[in-house]
Image (cartoon, rainbow, N blue to C red; front, side, top):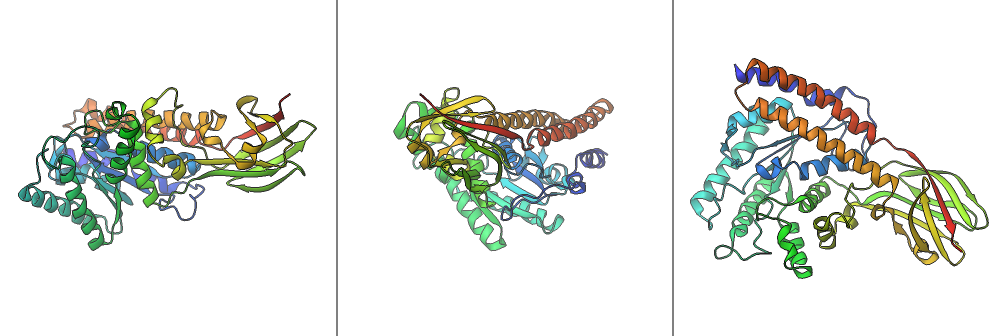
Length: 421
């Protein structure tokens, strides 16, 4: 039987594999723990593998050495009743239960409202179907931690609504129901709608024409908006802004304070300051603003950097003047002594740490391509050839995960700060 086979196949990449490792645990206070398996269940917005990858990249770069498994179980067009990949009970058995997750997120609703004004009958069908999914998971996997995700918005902000009040008002009604359900069942809730609406509103004020590109088809967010969705979920899980923070007193010289990093071999001569630093985390793997105007507009329209990407360096006691900061011989910027004393956010600069973080993002994209192909095979009637291919892809998936974790490991860097003539 296909069902029996896909359970065996999924176990080749089951979350139990993560539990056999001996990793360094994530920071205390963050909800995800070593050995956790997170399944993102949803429709085509989850199938985009963007906010899910952003979450994965955050965990890999903020907690290098951790062993947490991520499964993307989104299917385009899905509703609470299921869709092209099968009815909901088959979807749950094959695409969720088979992985024995410890953490589940659910985002459904964009397709359930049928792109029409609010209809009480449609709403009741959605509510009943959503309750069925939650009840089925709680019955099959008691103890699983839930986050219900309010649906990301239909863009009625940068373009005119297609009918009175707009379709996003329907999705917000769905979100209100989810809030009540989460409260009644003591589940966590993340609002992926309101923060995006706020960012779209600000983006429209900044650039009315260009803001329409952030959710290009009004349904599927672009990559920048997915980062805002990931931010909301990560905040629910206890994510904090700190990447690293270092304060150096150049007059002594001495390390005044360092958080999430180690500084050694601090030396000072007449016109320069040098030290070695090994960080326990990496900045978000965001593209340079010059190369990605979409991400740049999202950053300018949101609190993403303030909320998740603070890699601060402060240097007091410098003689007046302009200084060049180099990391591993690479110039990352020129700053005056006032800027350095106030603090600069290295996460916004082209540093070796950012380049390493982008490599982890590249690894994650590759892993997701493998996983997407593997998931496609197990969601169809499988021939002997496709069963073999799916098993092979599961092995490649394991190798891809190891590469992600390898590339996220902390690296020691040499810093130099030189007074310019």
